[in-house]
Image (cartoon, rainbow, N blue to C red):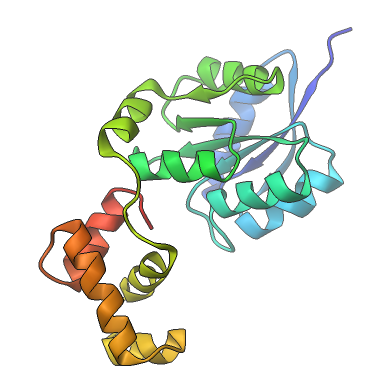
Length: 204
């Protein structure tokens, strides 16, 4: 008798989640045993359903798929993680691998490829979209420090330096220095451009 692979699907868009679940459900050896719409629900769902593989979208409420992957890697290392993304940003690939993901695929990959990735990660292999892998190598490492990324993420909603300083419990001078360094690293002219470029590259 074939051992069936128990899969958790984490995706905040219900239509996409249900479509993926239906496609995977057609596979003879895969069961989607749990579905969640929030990243912070992933660890409990994975534990409650004793899943073998977790398929995680990157952008979800609660926490990102990459943050959820890192938690699973720490708390439930036996669960294999496949990260799915709509956005082919090379920085996301690097972050996902650093978080412990075993596979990284774009959502528009054929269903057969996704099912094959589930089987491969369970067998101990890594599966990475080749186009994204090439782009990540060409792009190089994220030049931003953790603090610079934190400040740019906080600045993405248009907050002033004074507001950033208050919310992050830093002085305005410190915020200004970090922003200045990030702007230089990204070769842009201002804070707004730094946020845009860092987001486009998946570095936040």
